[in-house]
Amino acid sequence: MTALAKLEQVLPSRLRRRVEAVREATSIVPGAGPSLDLSVLGVVAAAIRGHERLRFGYTKPGGTEEARHTEPQRLVSWGALWYLLAWDLDRDDWRVFRVDRLVPHAPTGARFRPRAMPEDGVVEYVLGRISKWAWRYRARVLVHAPAAKVAAMIHIPVDVEVVDESSCHVEVGSDDPHRLALWLAQLDVDVEVVDGDELAVAFDRLATRLRRAAGGAST
Image (cartoon, rainbow, N blue to C red; front, side, top):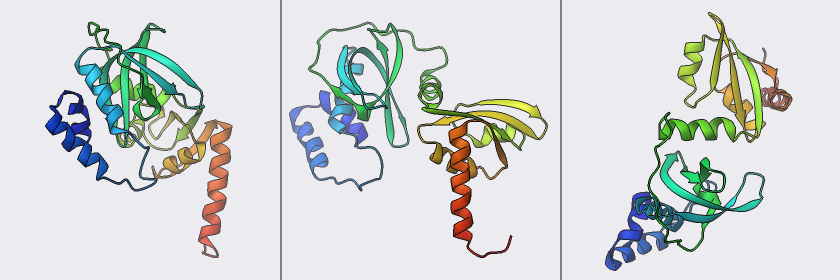
């Protein structure tokens, strides 16, 4: 379906009707992931393919809305989420947008010449932006495991600083400290919060919940 959405804008009418049939005949399990309008994905993909400037309304993480004027460069998918890497004409810099948060405006018809991509590579650059710069909560933890082991367990860009042969500091973050506490617990290694009050509180609540779940079990 995502492949069809990318092609929809350039398909002949006969095939476009098939795309519409797929969309109309498909239901999505509630809570399975962010709602994504495939027609929006198709509009963005068509603008990238045609080197056409794209205007859209964008809802920021805090809920505020603003208009953006961009030169769309590349779509990047990560799990259930899709991201747009674009040159923001108003800010004169690269920006990353979640596709499910944007509402395209009428086509501008204005063409642009593609710019050189960020030196880190598209995927690495986008992951770096959404993994670190977009975090609402930040924390620094001491992980009691070798830095190489920790880096191999964490599949997103994070800063890992060696402390000694058996421990390291890690800069982590999330929009939700409670989910971050759960995620760190799943690493199955001992961690200590060095800096990050929200994460420390989340760990305390998680510990209380787990002790309650264990009931009268012995240590």
